[in-house]
Image 1: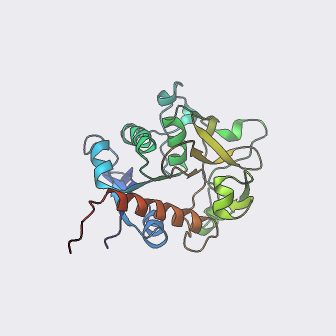
Image 2 (image 1 turned 30 degrees about the vertical axis):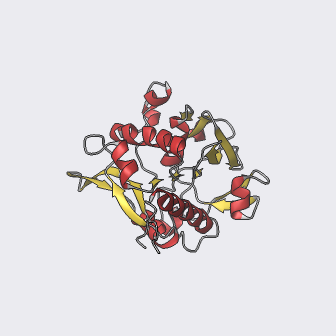
Image 3 (image 1 turned 45 degrees about the horizontal axis):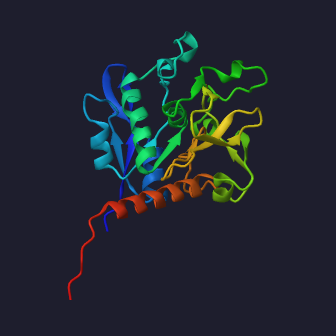
Length: 258
């Protein structure tokens, strides 16, 4: 049987500061292919090239990736400031309605970092541009120096709601994660259930209440070493199971004749 397709939301990127591309980290494709056991397909997230409707028809599930550009604050009623950093309005135009469509239909998605923030904004929530500036919060940004292994190393624990979806999935009430983000949830969107917090109170794990499908999203980067990490592996495995269930349900049923 052909593996189901996961659309990996791509980010705009300039090669050598001149050549424009849509790119997705290799670790995203590896996690989708080897742990979720699905076909990874990089999506050029730009409404000039495709529509949300075409994506829903082409893909069985979606990985909402991290990315350096942030969701534009106009999407949640705030004015942009220097602290908000760079933006990708084309990606906003695809991912926000895509999230809402998937929540409505039950088509699975997994949100990561910026993708986690997109889910919150799509459901009416707001973001803080620099959570380390909030009194009592720590710096969650990627370390500026070091190897990639050091940048993605586990840095803080996440405490999960007892008996919640993430607790049951991971089999633990506390897990260790990496952290590579500047922004964070300021106010939770409608139906957003926060089930994981960093030690400083920053929301780290959410899902959409009463959604018919898989909507788990995390602020950290589980795609790093997903095959071996005890937190990443069950997350991507569960996502892959949800995508396979969706793909099976949408296939035409062939009646066997005697």
